[in-house]
Image 1 (cartoon, rainbow, N blue to C red):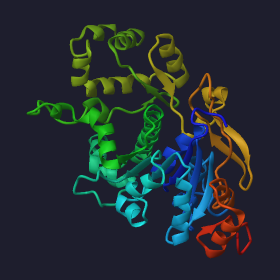
Image 2 (cartoon, rainbow, N blue to C red):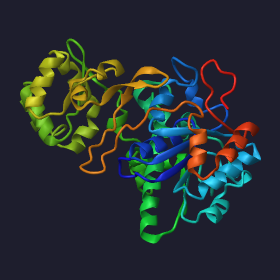
Image 3 (cartoon, rainbow, N blue to C red):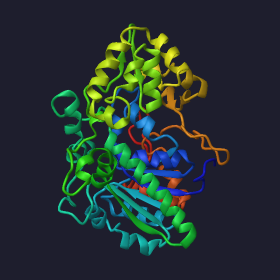
Length: 406
């Protein structure tokens, strides 16, 4: 099995976006991820257009390189099976609230007795030392709690959420990093541990590095919010035939931009000569850029500024990104045959490794596709597996048109 995490066995007790994104990153790096689903399946199975029930596009992209099993954790035999699996697992990740885990007999104290080397890593709404500890949380709530909609409002009017599950995915990345670092610590010490990755605090860490700003000082010496990031004029620029993304950022960039656009005198203007002055007058500069970019075509601007070594790129839509010449050259979007969904497009693994190269090993699983296989791999005999399937504590895959997948 390829990838730097080959051989690491992960029990994935998460659903929706945050946890599955974390386990996706681990799976792409070669970890053997067992996706444990409730009988109704992960919620994201039902999001978006699909060819078959339970195989929507969000699910496909979040859950490749994993195997699916169904355990009913409301059934005592389902919990018992999970505990048996924990004995030979390296990692348990979960997104249930800690009180729920404790009610299931899966608190860290319980799991540690089964396997003291296990990495027990949870991502949930809030740190357990604060008054919000027991609250549920989703991406929109965490964006609101950290102030992201207010930051957006300074750009575009009423408060609004960022148009992607940014909190879920940022916290998912933090969760995968925490698991990897805990595994590294175990390699040195031989000891497992519990790690908590709360959404509220993790996303605040992500956002406030930019936007605490003047409130970084006590007492404050200015307003909160990085002005350049919040400017309504910070946006792609319209050209004669499209839009470009441009980052005229440091002193060298601005001097070159003023020169190539015929405004060399602006480089000597104290308002624009250094980053402090430009930050103070960023709205004026953004307006200047907007007017300037409307004077040429996208291709002309890309050629001119690339030659001047000023960062620029043509703006894509999600559809045109598929045909972006760079993405096509690196093979980032790949077409493959899914065993149930037919021809689909997968998203590539972005890193390049000189050794232990990660690979797309298998596509997103159907619900319960690997239940019997995984129970067997984690130590259950065939008759025990059949008993669990018969009792409903575990469930296999229901084939299209079949009444019973057992």
